[in-house]
Image (cartoon, rainbow over all chains, first blue to last red):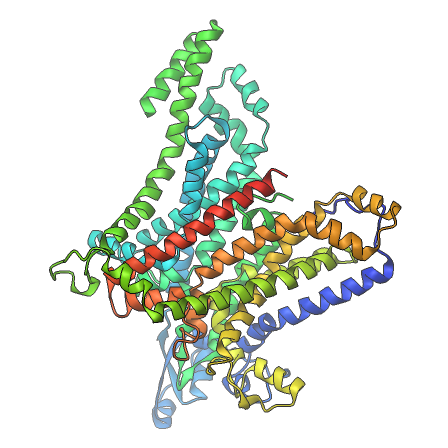
Length: 317
Length: 319
């Protein structure tokens, strides 16, 4: 993933060593993938297959999990079901085979939409604020620069529950409880520290000479920033944005403590998807699968910048 | 501030001919621009992080309860701090946290470094396999942690089935999440599964930063591979390993989401890490003043760790 350097150019490992190392790593990767594969398999199982013992590797694929995550159903007498017309769509006929009828859509889609709005809203804000601050810290002499940078980082070190106590009281008194705006502001404040640190690293790498040349050509500092630095920093800004998105998308602690309905995101919702008599595992797995797909895509897109992102820009390659 | 920078830029444009003056004015403008760029971030952090923190400090000296907001607030001084620091339950939670942090960090470091060492041998397809290994750490600990409760089910879970398959014990004879001796390990296993790739990635960067000529020189001196590992590889990758250890240590000290979903602190309080205790006090028994004091104690601890962490960061950076 990280582009191959020629660090060990002469002292190359032998073919046997390579094969041995390779097979151990592949073994680890396969074992580590089992839980993820199991999520996807469970999503396509019928409820009976999901809880059979021994666990089933081969089964007849079913879309019941996906139906159950998107709908709510109510149990009816067979006579009542027979009195209804033909089932409408696949989910309805699946529900009727279990003496149930689809009662309406579940809360999964609204929660998913909340996740999208809050993640994108906070990312845009955090990256915008972060880009400005990072440029300020990168190019100008700011008094107490190191202290300010440390202050910005330290806000991310607070345990989320410790932050949630006063935020809960504050939001309650100013009417931001359980609102998307409240969650966007909160996630922005958490993400902005990452954005500043990461983007400062990226902007530091852009030679100052570019802007200086532009300014000699008559650009003001601000114009040079917009027309020279921002285009150069596009990759860094995109990578930072994806990191912010992933954080906001995955966040659970604030969401479970500070939201209950209107602004609830998917992570606190998915674990409480319950069927009759306990958790409806195929539905949970289906909800989880849909929730994880964007992250898997982003991880592959981001693989060259992962190292930077997880170390706040400290390790570059 | 906006006006100031705009007007000084106009001034600068008007007098480009005099370099000394221009430089001074441009410098002024830069300063204004710097503050203009940095202030919004600082204001946001002051509003959403620092103001609440100050409020928490105030609440920690009172008997305030969030569910009885109209009751008179009484100043208690440092009573909460004294009772927390002498409370055996709090120390039990701290021990659970320490057990969790130490074991996860040890396992993740050993496995992560081992994997990085193997990947650094650059076998065919190592890039693709590295990306695959990295996947778990990008996923939501809450959503994936929740799914592990299914894998850990004694009757139907895959984890129990696999353990039963290899050990010959009955799959329903042990409960990873319901047993007081097994549940602390259940959360360690899930955390190690998620975060070993994280340590691996940082260690890999460390291994790749070692220049090849050092190994060449060691070969010339006929140092054994074993000797090369202990006197070149490990010492030179150490700052990176330290970085990973500190980062994992801080993150796991704050651990909430995965544990909350897997065990909720149970059975009893065997997996009640500090964040769970805090959440129970703050959002279940609504002892806001008490939990504020505990939050401040945790925050001071994390802040101390963060300080060490940033120093280590700078050391790695300056390499």
